[in-house]
Image (cartoon, rainbow, N blue to C red; front, side, top):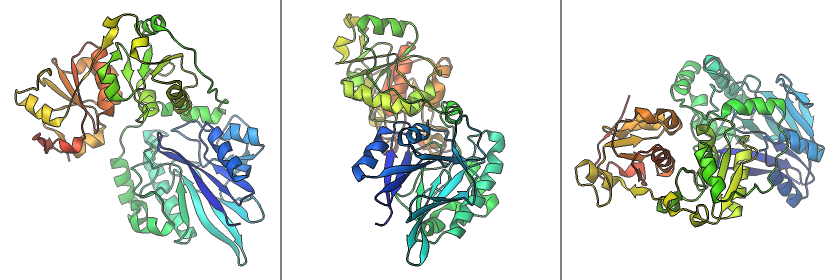
Amino acid sequence: MAVEVSVIATSSLGDRSYLASDGQVGVVVDPQRDIDRVLYLAGEKGVRISHVVETHVHNDYVSGGLELARVTGARYLVAAADEVGFDRVPVSDGDLVAVSDGVRLRVIGTPGHTFHHLSYVLDEATDGGWQPVGVFTGGSLLFGTTGRTDLLGGGHAHELAHHQHTSARRLADLLPDGAQVWPTHGFGSFCSASQSDAPESTIGREKAKNPVLRLAAEEFVAETLGGLDAYPAYYAHMGVANAAGPAPVDLTPVTRADAAELRERIAAGQWVVDLRHRKAYATSHLAGTVSFGLDGPMSTWLGWLIDWGTPITLLADTPEQVADAQRELVRIGIDRPAAQATGGVEQWTAEPGQLRELSMADFPALAAARAGNAPAGLPAADVVLDVRMTNEWKAGHIEGAVHVPLPDLPKRLADLPPGAVWVHCGSGYRATAAASLLTNAGRRAVVIDDKFGRAEAAGLEIVTEA
């Protein structure tokens, strides 16, 4: 049987893991921490997992590799140069790993995303010998881009960017144009220098499209470093956890909180997170809560904003939604929420006065408000707050807007000018989170629940920064 590679996507974090098999034995590459998905896929295909491999010590999620290897008895391959607190099979550039009679891995040193980063070429036995099918590139060569080079500290970014250029060129030289490229990052992950430009790719396509294979080294380094934006604060904890050896996850149901306990947790300054869609949150929500709907990258933004270790309570319509959130959170090392409650806002408080509404509008309404004609029920647009990231702001923003990226907002609330705040992002998700923080701080807020691309057509002046 020909080798088959299955993708295990974690869209909320913008990453992919892989299961490569010959129909009998398989290799898992860069597994997320909730390994039940991998075990289910392997069982469905009737495949025994013989090897688990890591391309690098991950910075954007807690790995499930150690636990998956323990559960399955697989060999756990980690770069020999990485200092880790657990037993593993150390591998280095040039090593050959026999998976079965028909499948093998070639270990290729590809520093850049990290100093000890590895890629793994997947070879298949043919009548003419071994033929490369593709390469698992982790955070090295991505679709149309590369992994960012500043996650180990800004002081290493320039050196690592040069390594990244050399590593990508090495892969392009080693492999035929038809070889598949299977990266871990690039599908929304902040580990990527920019975002994927395709759902799949080959070495030949990357030669034609990817700046790292089209630009000279100094040009690539300058372009890469110049385009980097901030990355989630919780990344600081991921590499440490992965090097130490992550504990198994516990996804059992969380203790239920009643209305009195929810009130106490909010009063204590803990984070009580409403997982419902932002429109439901706007209609009615418990005062003091923060909106991070499950329809968006909840764990990324929540993990970025909280002070690490702060107790988190989850609110949702159903227990299934809480379970989904738990799964998202363990991937970034938030192992157990403090409590949870389901069933809707009427069950989360015994006092109607604790329920609030949140005003929502669109860009035409903002344009009217800025012209002095705010729609009925909405305040004047004293402050227009843009909570997008810096690169988004530079690419185009509303003239006269105040820019505070969402991750910075909790510590900069006092910096905002007085008056009612109309807050926007790119779609409404981050704006709703921001508005909940503003409201909790006593500010009057209006969420612009609209696509930023519609702002100019609504009559708002858009300016850019060089």
